[in-house]
Amino acid sequence: MSEKVILVTGAAGYIGSHCCVDLLNNGFKVVAIDNFFNAHRDATGKTNYPESLLRVEKLTGKSIDFYEVDLKNIEDVKTVFQKYEAIHCVLHFAAYKAVGESFQRVLEYYQNNISSTCNLLMVMKQFKVFNLVFSSSCTVYGNPVYLPLDEDHPTGHCTNPYGSTKAAVEQMMKELSQSDPSWSFTFLRYFNPIGAHPSGEIGEDPLGIPNNLMPYIAQVAVGRREKLYVYGYDYQTNDGTCVRDYIHVMDLSDGHLKAVQQLLQPNRKGVHIYNLGTGEGATVLQVIHAFSQASGKDIPYEIVERRKGDVDSLFASCQKAEQELGWKVKHSLSDMCRDMWRWQSQNPQGFNPVTSEDAKNYLHKNLTRKESEKWKSMIQSLNVE
Image (cartoon, rainbow, N blue to C red):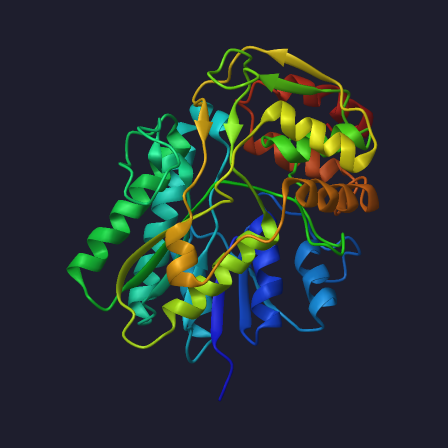
């Protein structure tokens, strides 16, 4: 039997690259697309591949077909689909994903996250590819009515534009499935992925200043940043900082693998929704303490005002995923911190040292961000005009 072909959008990113490892190790052929918005190119300059996917190939001993494609260009997306006799399933990760940033870049978030997904679905329909696993988010739940959050919790009352785009895409896919029974969708609403591949070869390495907690902590620990900013101290939690459900990226990857395997079963149609988390919450200060223990480093931090769009607590009920997908987490918070520290300590500058070109590209895409002032000193040191 020939290999099943899985197309992965946003494949060079943090979660996408880890999922590529599991797909390849389980006998799937991976077709990867990415537009390098948040990814590093081959450090040697010998290929047009992302550095993360070159390392995935090294880890697995298997090859990936990679195409530099932006989903906003529908003709480029069609070109990729035309190259394959059959694509059996799409894993859709490509999206802008920072809660805070989404308030400053509302139109860009809607265009990229919704319009691009619409392009993808139109091309899939044209080429009769009807299976898709969607990288959704717990932000679709908004302010919790109850905890833990299960899949029946109301959605759509989102507290930030990022969450609104995820909820809108879910709704679009639900209505598409209702209009045409050929479609089969799985929404994976995951919580807060952290950690890294246990080899330390791949991990989270955002371009510019991290928007997420764990890469920021790791960069403070390795000396790339002076201190961490903790947003808010008066939440209704045991220490006043936000509670989130942190999940190891390899557990998350395993959830995607099991979702693909389920989706490819005969007569699997309609929409299926699963939470992926640990079912337990940890405060920001607890995560800082756990990382400090794992790394042996002090993590200096400053508590500042709340960040717009954050809620007190979010943690998951994952019973449905366990019962229907046979999925269950294997890693603890200390495991997540240990693996993240291995990645960051082995790769102090991430996949590539910051270059002048990185700085230019980042600024051109983020001119409205408040943190642009922080980049000025770095640009001057790089002699970027």
